Length: 222
Image (tube, rainbow, N blue to C red; front, side):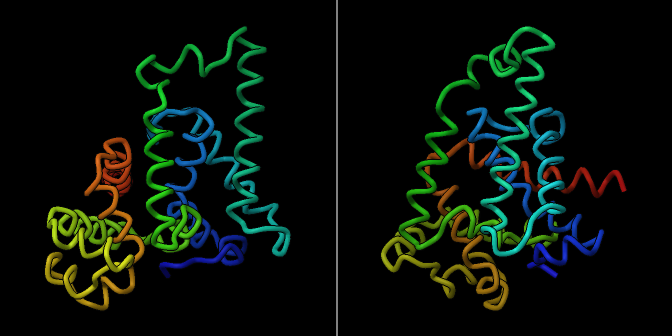
């Protein structure tokens, strides 16, 4: 059940929970594009607002209007803008100006996102594509990330990937000590992890690692 559809999420509570978890990277990316800073899932008010907006977007989305991710982006951004306006009215200032430490208000994250987007486009991929191929289950995602990180440390694999503009599956299978079926099933996600960890994208690397920590934290709570 790794690729849950919006239709399944609208009719099943379990499917909705998995659908939302699979879209955490998308939600974080959307919040970051508005705030220009790294998002900490556990205690970030903006993320909570965006998560609520995303959940609402599932309920109100109608097929055929646009891609769900496009629709959800608009819903989340509008919700965040309303939230910031309410905060300004209540406290007399924009929360983005005073609650974000100065080092986090720079353009580092925006630059890394733009850089990764450019690199992905060379492989015929986009952030919307990643949402669709991102593994839903924690174990699967963690394994795919581990395989990608291992492969990213082998220079000739990274070089080969850029030469053929796709994931060198056979080589990655050996490097990741896994099966061809697993790598092929998650090839675009693993390719992205390799891109992130073979380049100087420290914010994005932290985001990928935090996506594992967040799921582990949820498991521990249960």
